[in-house]
Length: 202
Image (cartoon, one colour):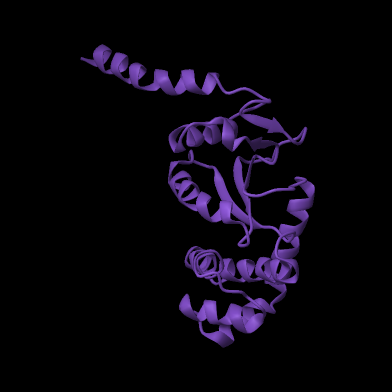
């Protein structure tokens, strides 16, 4: 019985191993740095002003629970879309993380900009969205002005520059590999590719 179980397990894992072995540099991913992060991590670079980023959200939501143990995930808003409000929304997303409402805030902002086609013109509009997310306006305003949030937003800007991000959505694994999203046929294969790269040692 034990031998049959091991054989069955091997048959289950074989397609995943074979699929992983088929992933190729230059086709499925690009090396953007010679050094990798100390611990495995996945970073999604996005903008609230990017329609493709909104469409990509369900795939990223499917990815997060499927990441291998010990792999961290983070989202990094970029400043280069949306002009001044792109920068303001980087700061706002950092505040949403601090306030632990980043998921609902993300959905609300995408809905506001991409579905309802409304503009965000300043802090009052951002505070309105935080209020919809269940955050008191004064609490949200204090978070937006905090050193922690300003520092986190500055780090997002540095991350974007370090990884030479020019378009979004972009998925960077271990700070070294950029995923070629167009090289996979479905969400399942995308998840397999990302997990493969998190474990890649060379």
